[in-house]
Length: 305
Figure 1 (cartoon, one colour):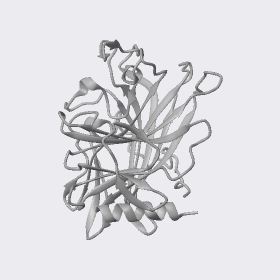
Figure 2 (cartoon, helix red, strand yellow):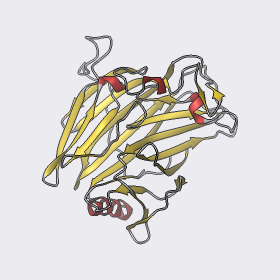
Figure 3 (tube, helix red, strand yellow):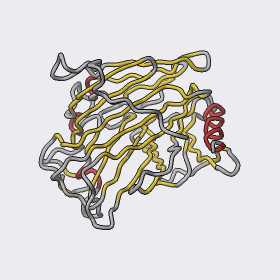
């Protein structure tokens, strides 16, 4: 499946940016599906990151703080002695932003069209320079990174109105050398009632039970409620871009925190040990609806030439 055509974020002066230093991050898009509407909401406090996805009145996103969202992040030069959070540009903001009303990330542009959202943000580091992760100090020396994250989200594909067509573009700054990069192209933190974990078997075109892990595996995954009335999945329908390895689909259950998480991850490990300062674009699809709706959408993608 080919990605949707991406339109420049700075086209025809239509973006809501020029008249204010910081555009409002409060936006809503919606589209009909299954006798209801899929509604996606962003807020200024999260620099335009998605904090709510609802269908039939059901909330699919946890949104407890600046981490538990539907959002994107990256990390670099990860080692046992340098865990990912210690250099971790994050779309919605930093750990210290917590559940507060502001984000350390800086929203640069936002635009809504019918059923479509486009944003661009300068990502904060998850840790401030004074913070630690697993006892290891932050490797960043500023709170705000020079890494940019642009996203384009459209509700619905032809014949599949329940699929979020989601493209993210990470722009790495020049003059910041890295040997490896890890792109969490998209992660979704969901309420704990999405307790059933599934992986899609391309041979049977069915969703099959998946262990808690935690960790990554190669098949697209889905989370559902026990009754199957609500589910969400993640799939990358296209081959990995040149230079990127993946996708890996991760799943995690945080019982104490009462939240579950999925993600879709790509890694860049150049042979010459030099990650290019460039754009890294990833195309993702997020089916939602009932368990049957999600399984049918994944089966259709599997059958596509």
